[in-house]
Image 1 (cartoon, rainbow, N blue to C red):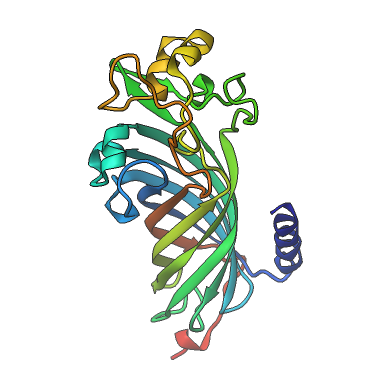
Image 2: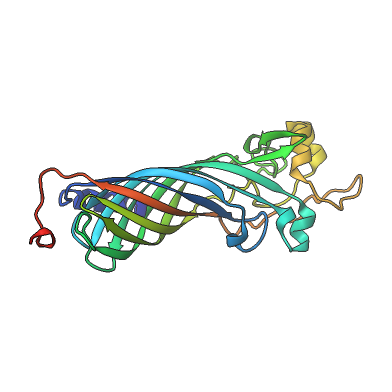
Amino acid sequence: MRRIAITFILLIAALSSRAQSPDIGLWIGGSQYYGDVGVINSFYMPEDLAFGGFIRFNFNNHLALRTGVGFGGVQAADSLSEVPFRVNRNLSFRSSIFEADARLELNFWPYIIGVPKKHSMYVFAGIGFFTFEPQALYQDTWWDLQSLNTEGQGTVLAPELEEYNTWSLSVPFGIGYKANIGRRFAVALEFGARRTFTDYLDDVSGRYVDPDQLEGINGAVAGALSDRSLNRAAGEDNTFFMRGNRETNDWYFISAISLSFKIFDHPERCHDFDD
């Protein structure tokens, strides 16, 4: 992944010298999650508000570079699932997200912002960085889960696991439609996926550990949040049973509408404006 990121950055640097005057924009939409918690189909996950801003450099009428930042959130609950295992597991979480990315946009048809009656479908892909902080509600309080080591990460209960970072790289990609509004403005609709490189966006990845032992290490809240199963009898636990799927990483998605403004360095002429 590091080599891919370096290659992408070098490509951006090479293309930037050919960029025309940029446009800047704001976007607003919704963010959703797909991972180990909640329903299987991501499109039925609860949606949180997401928003951000960007700057776009157009190399020609087919290729552009966009960099920007965004804020959003994701959440899920096993109680919304129809899968018996997940319903009984009874886990839930929420997490705020901050992301920064750089992406290349490829227009299907020739498109230049500022030219009347111009529009195009487009696809995009790039490299991103994001931070997250999974939390769970317990006894009317939201608890940060990473420091509780709910699967024994960084403790003697799971010596093979290190504490996970609350940041990760991502690969944003997706599809959209953009259209001009007059000479300097454009509007766009976009759907994008973020393929992450962490399985802990939801704090769920591997196996259960003994909640009583975890309580002795990290406290009563850690023990309670590590195993919230509904049908667990008193004195029993799910130690060594699967809590999540370590073979797949988590994803999140953003659907958005954006408005951008063209920054002209000097008046530009185009035959579309000529009489």
